[in-house]
Amino acid sequence: MIPVLFIHGFPFDHLMWRHQLAALSRWRCIAPDLRGAVASYATDLIRVLDGHRVDQFVVCGLSLGGYIAFELLREHPKRVRAAILCNTKAAADTPEAKRGRDAMIAKAQREGASAIAGELVPKLLARATPERQPEVVREVTEMIGRQPVSGIVGALRALRERPDSTPLLGRIRIPVLVVAGEDDQITPAEGMQEMARAIPGARFALIPDAGHLTPLEQPVTVSSAFADFLSKLG
Image (cartoon, rainbow, N blue to C red; front, side, top):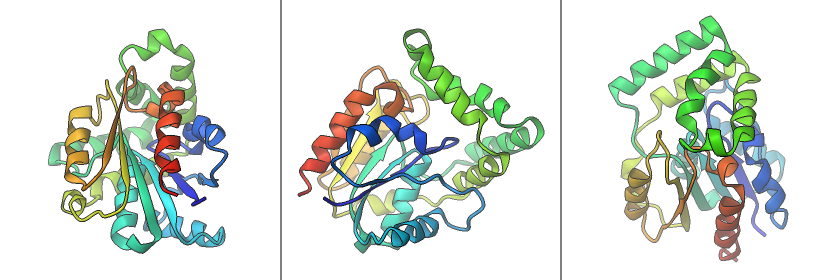
């Protein structure tokens, strides 16, 4: 079976995919931690894949990981067999969003990773998750808190400067699954559905009772959607 490259979001590590890595053991899953000081995440990940002797692969990225998936599709299109785009978008940052990135960089440098967790966690999860799944809140808070400030700053700069991938959407000619959280406050489901419509033949999956972190908030539903998509690739 074709290998699957899992690319985590910001500001997390590969453990945000832990449920999917366990559920999708039929496939060869590669889930590296992104390095925060590289010139290009896509180039760095291609080196990782080369080290694993992987030529073609399925890319599965969430949020920042989705932006990197677009980068891989632009720079290495012949190597990407299919794509799963979770809780992400194609558009570049607006001027207002860029100012927000700058403010968060300053906050991370001044107050550390725990301050970033305090700011982000309420936005990352569905509004019902804190009451229904407090263990997810703890896991997400701890995951952000253990990230190095250098990695947080590097990722924020990459987010700030990413190009607009909207023109790419209509040119994609591989199988694509777009996964959205019903209560995603960062990349709303409506926008993700529009993105799916712009990609020829893309499938769209709406995950109930989930925000921006669908793989952690609704792991069974997300893993099932992934497995169904991957099993049809042959």
